[in-house]
Image (tube, rainbow, N blue to C red):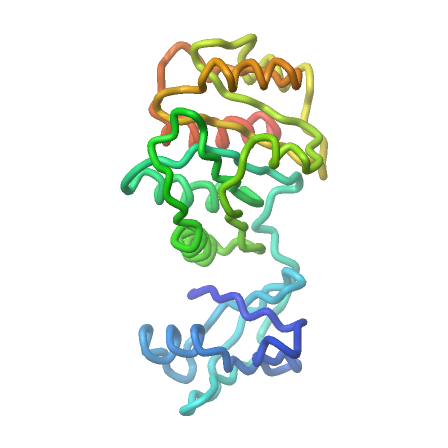
Length: 246
């Protein structure tokens, strides 16, 4: 069932309306996607989600030149979310590898991504708009309740001005303990904010390692294998979720 974000609470900036038993879709992007790209017809079903993370199972009752009217058949709070806040600070990569990271981060429930131009960063160009679009499309595909944010590139100093309950730095060549050991000693609690930091293909610089040590941040390994940066991101996020849910 196709899945679309329709907002609904911000009446001034959102033309869509939710007035049970009907939902009217008027925003240009959703209208074009549903009516023109998908060529949807009356009687077809759509899964819609509003700002309160309420999902609506609907049936299209009318499509005209300006709007799509749907009848609500069922509604319920979305369960497509983690019950702790997972954030990623990551050094952008070249080519399609970075797009894959943004896509998989969205699929794995990351709340937001902080691009960091580290000392050894391979990419020094801000592609935030493109990265955000990839995360938006991935969120639609996997029925996420919230669209993760992609922030403007910033430094570690700027990122750490935000409050996080746990900060985990993955660094294969200079590590203190495994993720399993660290989380067994410091289990993630429901509602906590957890920041994952992963560097570029060339690794962190000595200056950055000194900064992590100054801030008393744990340096964690994913095992004996040396992983490419994009593989490390997916593995780290997946392992954290596994250890939390286990």
